Length: 132
Image (cartoon, rainbow, N blue to C red):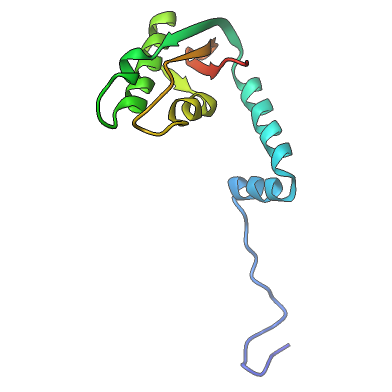
């Protein structure tokens, strides 16, 4: 069937979504909380925790640093403490730890922070904020 412009109207263009696009479309249809729960469940299934330690890190050196260096220095101190606890350089900070360190801005930070440090099967060390 031909339209007034001379183009065929029977055939519509077919678009094939990549797996990533299909997954985002599925997530958009669900609630935000459900999507977060699924993401956390997938993350837990990927790597099993071999060892876990609770640690309180003193951030005094970062707190007393001058200028706008407190939060970046606190991040370095937390990474160093986690790598020293499990003797590895591959350290990943969770978003909760990052938010806790940056909560008061770049120039100020907390004086200490309680952490849960996990060593995963893949050899990665994951740093999580302690509850409470």
